Image 1: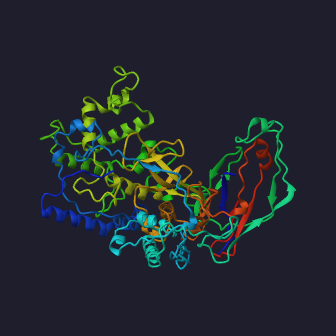
Image 2: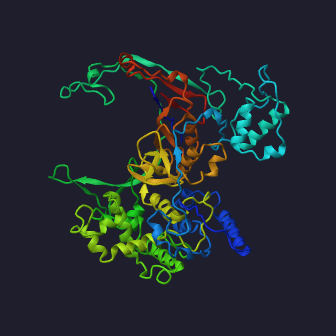
Length: 636
């Protein structure tokens, strides 16, 4: 087996980096420093998914409070004068601000992200988070006959070491390299104090390779107990209309071989999902087979039953707020997520995204650049409707790509392959020149605010859009009991610093985020180029698991069942997810190595066809015992 299942059974219990000139004088430098400080003061340690999540959408007052809690920065005027004369560079890949260099010739390689749980030595307490990182430094490697010299390092030089340099020096001396920087630094000082020589052999582990000892986050005394299958063979179902039925992973010539399958006697109860919703009562109509109508009360209102919500659905708030019916048109659904005029959720203190706001920002950016005077003399302001047309053009281009998006502006009489008569009539004459205005000045961020530090705000230019998406997505949808977390990729061609290169599967490269979804609907997301939430990384979690825990923060109900693939799953993370305030029950496949699985459930991968047929259908399982904070975790 190359992958193993790990799941829960639970007993019931009640792209903005710029190449710009430095400030020309001290006042400008002080202004930039003041802006940076204000950004850190307002928005520090507030993940996007947390800052925008409305906890109780039923109350308009509370929704308004949630909107006003979204960080807002004081405008600072930007200098866009250099955009004059930059038009010829836009088609060469330069940024629309006119101040940026071409897209960076850098790609971040997104590898398989293997991690060894035992290298993060943490312990979980009652709040479900690791408390402190502990490491036994009392036993350090001793000198051997092969190594005879000791290299001293001064304190001043050691203070300049990065994490990688500290690990390099520790490896030279055979010391462990797990933990945070402070632990690494202390370990290196201890090694230098004991004059551990360079080249000392790495401390060997005395643990048996087949040991079932658990990661330190589990309770002391916890262990895996193997489950024994029943002797009785499970009878295969017969289907006379489907001869030689076989799984897609089994060759057709092996379909005649039926493996023996055995069940397990143990039964475990999961903690029930607590999300509820109202369901309309139905009554069967007389004389009409399989025809039902809605029961009405004395006031003519539908009669409702409160039931456990098994599947996700549109929230009652969205149904009422946006007057959704079976006859609602697609354009009306789009207007929920991209409002045409003023956003209905905006307040006096905070205006949320709409096409009207985007049009004002776009026109303001053009005005600051001198459009209509020093550059683009034929410029005129965009309206919200016109801006929506250009955005729609890119949506059409995504569904039906052309070598150049401008070719869709032509009539089919002049371009039979890529021309579009509907688009040509909608945009009218001089559409291609107008689209150049759009590409030069379209703004999805307030153009008067100076661009902050890229490391802290990598998605600054589209942050208002992401903020609005993080606000509206959970508001209009109620999650069912079953959810999933997986990576989501926005593919594109070309180079960019934050582009993730997928080397382990053929999915295409692009911007990546971790997404929490339900039945095809994206409920919450966290971009991978955004800083991982310190709320979880400070406890030793990997950035991947920290982002996933932040996604769990957006849930409104407890005991969702979350499916994940082998990139995310591990025994330790299953416990951390269950100890989350929303008690998420994780399940799915995981990798065999370094994910906390007991050795007795792992199986050697069969190489020959005869051996594969022999072991097919074999299931080994174990249950976690003696950990009250993680009861009945099953590995198989």
